[in-house]
Length: 156
Ligand code: SF4
Image 1 (cartoon, rainbow, N blue to C red):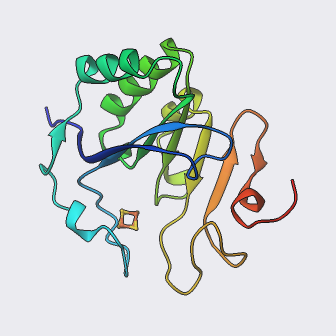
Image 2: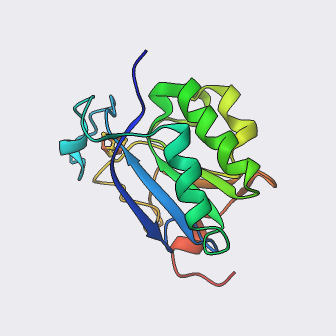
Image 3: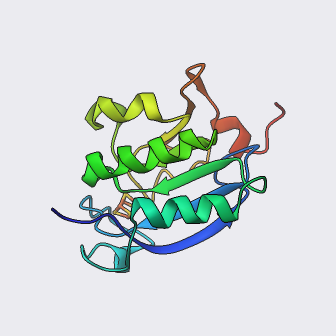
């Protein structure tokens, strides 16, 4: 069985509005977007294996300091990602996935374990979430609300 691996781990404030997130950048993205800023992460097998024990240890260390766990990719190992999302939820944390897939392309079994979802490939001519012309969408799955405006400096 292949492992879920990450090439970086950091605390972030902007990627999920209103949340302090522990973010894991997963290696092995198969989408090959033109102009991807992280093409060095495409190779599967790069980085550190993310195990349940490792995540549980990190969440214990950050208890009371973070409110969300964010996965940048990893949906290509859906079963393992689901396991990690469950662990985050057990700690009563919100969860978020940044994927280049469209929502209908994503394994629907992941959705009940997610609070937030960012979808859409990187298209250089459309820009990211902070661009009003973007193809990408950031959704609060609890309400179904599109939260792109929170990345674009518009009033709440
Ligand atoms: S989805 Fe993200 S990481 Fe994957 S190729 Fe596209 S821009 Fe790169």
